[in-house]
Image (cartoon, rainbow, N blue to C red):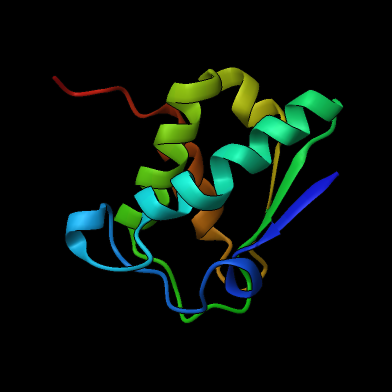
Length: 107
């Protein structure tokens, strides 16, 4: 299993949706850690575990952007079947992430 601990590996103070919104955005997290972490887990045939606990909190836009991009890149069902989310402090984040993975592009 490959593990990404967001507060330890990225930041304790996650930002908003995109780079334009400021530092530590969901888009930046996807680009710098999440995409490669998931690709490595896929290559090794293991799941990716993402730990949310220990941060100062997450905006819905951060979670939606990072995990929407992951679902778009690797396929929504494959992502959800190979992702373990740890959010004991705020369990509702898991449902927000699931919605982000399955969110359709609006164009």
